[in-house]
Amino acid sequence: MDDTVVNGVTCHYRVSALNAVGEGNLTDSEHATPTAEGGIDDDDEGDDNTLLYLIIAAVIVAAVAGLAFFFLRKRK
Image (cartoon, rainbow, N blue to C red; front, side, top):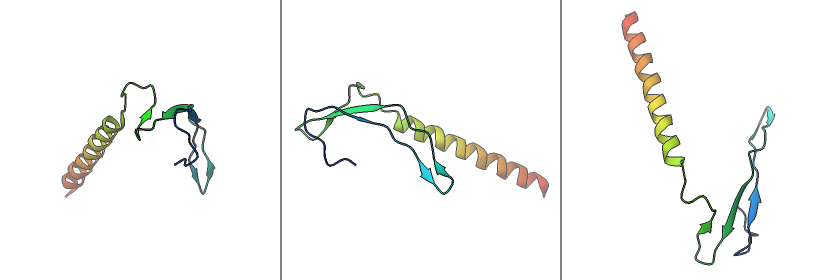
């Protein structure tokens, strides 16, 4: 979250993950331009893939759980 942005001024961000092992690599630069209407104009034309990634993750988790159930049941 960045509380220092100014409407109409494009901001560029790069982020990395940090854990007990250390800091990860920085992402590619992303940009956004806040507007007075409360939204952002990020020039991505609505290409938000978050839902797609969540669906893919859910399918993978379900597949792994199904395989684990199958193999555990087969052992008995």
